[in-house]
Length: 159
Image 1 (cartoon, rainbow, N blue to C red):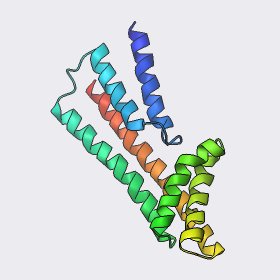
Image 2 (tube, one colour):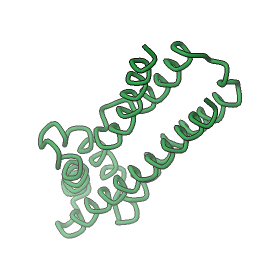
Image 3 (cartoon, rainbow, N blue to C red):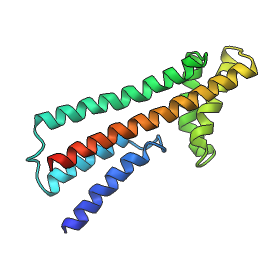
Image 4 (cartoon, one colour):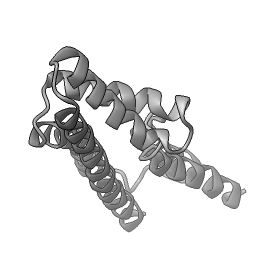
C-alpha cells in the first residue's frame, strides 16, 4: 500500500510542475496536497512550524515571481498596464484556443493586441511588447520551477 501512497503523492508533485506550462492548474495546491497526503499516509512528525513557515514564504515567492516577471517583461519592452492585462488574459486563454503552442502565442497576442487597441501603439512596438511578455512568461516558468524544486528538496530532506 505504501507504493500506492507514493504514487498518489508523486502524481500531485508532477501536477505541480505541469502547472508551469498549464497555468490553469493550481500548482501550489498540488504541492501542498502532496505534503499533506504524506502526513496523512505516513506521519506529520517532520513538518514542524519551521517547515510550514518556509514553505509559505516560498509560496509568496512563487506568486511574486509570476507577477514581477510579467511586469518586467512587458514594461522593459515599453508596455503598459493594458499590455500586462492582455498578456495575462492571453496566457489563460491561449492554451485553450491553440493547444500546446498557445501557452506562448497567447501572451504574445494578448499583450500586442492590448497595446494596439488600447494604447494605439504602432505594429512594431506592439510586437516588441508581445515579445517582452513571452520573455517574462518564460523567465517566470524557469524561476517558479527552481522555487518549486527547492520546496520539494526541502520536503525530501526532512522526511
